[in-house]
Image (cartoon, one colour):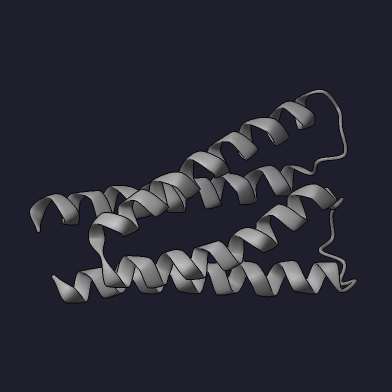
Amino acid sequence: MRIIQGVFALVAALFGLATIIAGVRVLSGSDPGYIVFRPLLIYNTAMGIVYVAAGIIAWRSFDRGKYVAATIFVLNFFVLGAIGYLYATGSAVAIDSIRAMILRTVVWLMLFLGLAWMSHRN
């Protein structure tokens, strides 16, 4: 059980670290090759820190980890809906941003489901 818990925690923390690195690079002036919707960039970079914290929480407790993962999933889902709406109405949101937000949302849904399943078994 502890190994599986470690895998979930590691995925969350590494995903957070990758998110922070990517966000800081773009905030520092690196061109990602598409239009950057700055509020989304700031949200995702800040959430990278939350992802790392979620990894630490998941390492310590399946129960707390599942609640944090569920919260992150819901927040990302709402942000995905908002940028999807903006994209559909012609605002300056790149399709790459939509795809990246879909990935983030799916990753956190999978982490939540995995942690919830392990919490239930534990």
